[in-house]
Length: 122
Figure 1: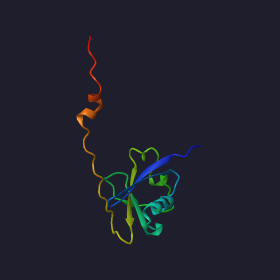
Figure 2 (figure 1 turned 45 degrees about the horizontal axis):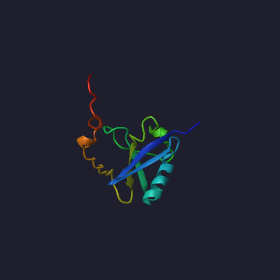
Figure 3 (figure 1 turned 45 degrees about the vertical axis):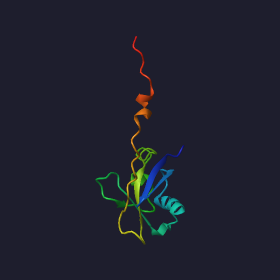
């Protein structure tokens, strides 16, 4: 049976890291991946998750699997990854995330409807 991957965006200040892991991975495995990228020791990381913006951030336990944390392949896709806040316990007291900048609008000449010539009506 093929393993379903989930996609997460681990965020702290201006850092936004996109990671894919099997749905059955536990939080400790996610922390090890983050440690390899950011060089922050696993024991100094605190990861928090919320399903939507109306919820409070809740701490994720090392032994929990991603699916137990309600992070699964149906909701954490490449187009819409689960957002997880990273708190470095020796530096941060709370969740501190700066949003990514939005891309500029697509010029009219590059829009799909403008790129195709209109069909002649006979």
